[in-house]
Image 1 (cartoon, rainbow, N blue to C red):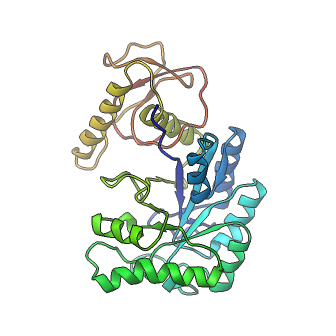
Image 2: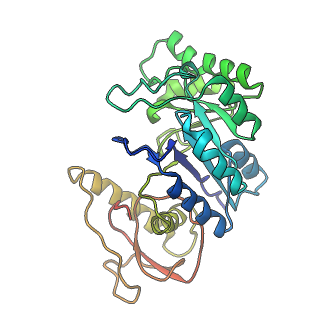
Amino acid sequence: MRMAAPVILMYHSISPDDDDPFGIGVRPSRFEQQLRWLRRRGRTGTSVSQLLAARQRFDARRLVGLSFDDGYADFTEYALPLLHRYGFSATIFVPAGQLGKTSDWDPEGPRKRVLSGPQLRMIAHAGIEIGSHGFRHRSLPGLSDAELAEEVGTSRAMLRDITGQPVTGFSYPYGHLDERAVSAVQAAGYSYGCSVRATEFAGQYALAREYMRQSDSPRSLWNRGLRHWVKHEYQGPGAATLRAAGYAAKRAAGRSAGRPAECSETNSNQPAPSALVPRLRGGRDSIWLGHATEPVLHGATWRVYPCSTRRF
């Protein structure tokens, strides 16, 4: 039996700040709601390295990786206390050359403070895994050999010296990667690398994650989780056909001028719009295939119809 894809959620800023033109922030109240939803369903948030180690032991069924990109200083004030409240751990990926500075890599975005060296040591000692997000948060493809070595190798050494702990994970800035970048991360001694979404380099050094937003309510988490279960775990009748339909739907949506086709939830007793409808263990209503994260419950009965990548 094939092993299901690891479930890793990707956050950036946890803050009540409303100045968020790029949609990277989640308010503390929503973040706590998401953590509470995971715990009520028997899931434990953990660091990426802990999740991968548990997978090697075939003991990761109830684990969800929590990751934070960009190393924003608001992590210490808002995210860390909530993680401790729920008994969760996490990984934070930090651009080492930006410590104590601001997020000036986005010239049109708001300036957010990046963790300082002392703050980084504090959260490392609090049980948070520290990973590299490059040195100056530069897109790796196209860099010179010297620039790539700085982003990948120098950043790792600097973070290791500051925290006194191993730095085994790398998150590609902007999610940009190519064969040369992946090879550089592996050669620099990292144990794994995280991308943003699935790529042609899928594997230990290009782990896909699920982008978490303020709009992710418990309802949307449930829906996205079920779709991930269909895509990565369901082994019953029609599994291959359903996955193929999901990929085809995503491609079709991408061709529609950036506007996903409209779908709607339907009652599970209504006739299917296609013949691709095995019954799946899940919830009570019907739901469409689309973009996904990890399932966190399996309940009564779901029908899954191929459609677009609409987010719920």
